[in-house]
Length: 111
Image 1 (spheres, one colour):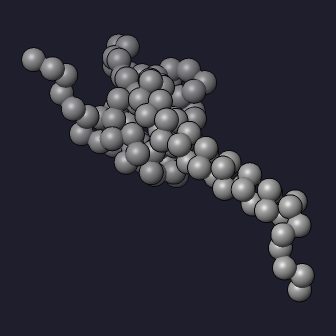
Image 2 (spheres, helix red, strand yellow):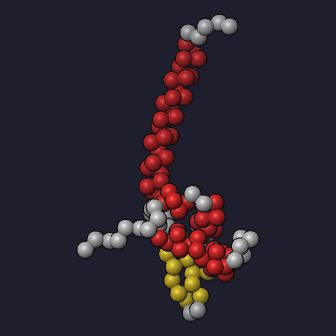
Image 3 (cartoon, rainbow, N blue to C red):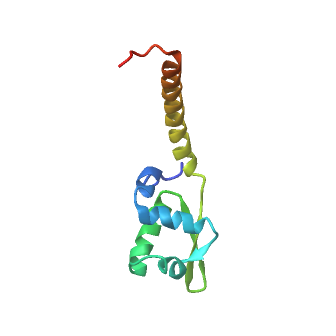
């Protein structure tokens, strides 16, 4: 049997600024929920809910250490986002190159 599909995709997961900040904080290394919660004006259960969405998308992993739950970043699913953005980066690079060529060619009408 194959792996279960994530409940949330990467795009849904990073759509929220709180979750983006959580990913940024976890980029510094594994952290417990209490330490992460200190960075937000919301309750620990609210932060835990955001972490669950990130976990459902495969962006974070959790592990129990005694009574504490610690989270760490799993950056691999972000490659999907990177590939998607790379397409549009190439698109805009081509558009800007065409604009530059047009402007430098002197073919524009004088006003």
